[in-house]
Amino acid sequence: MSRDELVKIKSPAAAREKIRRSFMAICNHNDAQPSNATRWAINNQGLRQLSGTNGLMVGDWMKEFATAINDHNQKYELGQYHNKGKGDITAAIKW
Image 1 (cartoon, helix red, strand yellow):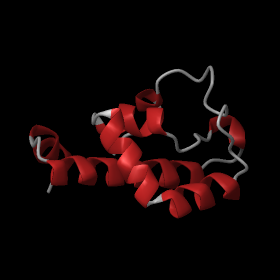
Image 2: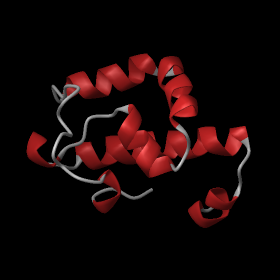
Image 3: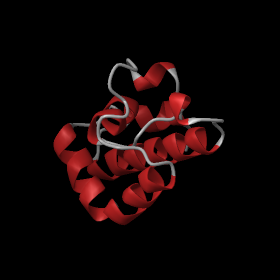
Image 4: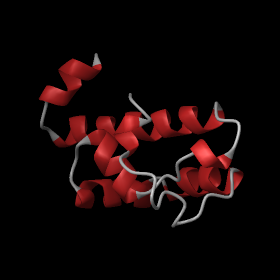
């Protein structure tokens, strides 16, 4: 399903897919960056902004996939304050 089609759907399953695609977009973006200056830590706010879903749903998804999120953030030593002052993640990353 295309992004444009998925964005129009408001079901819980569609929300989970939007979050998953947002997670993958951040991972792919970070893997292509030369330094941490242009990488984004995976956190609730970033996933919320990219996916357009509410924070509670993002939080539940993050609990379920905590190992994958932690592994990726640790891979690049991205901490909880890494995104501070970077602005809106949607300006840098699309899915």
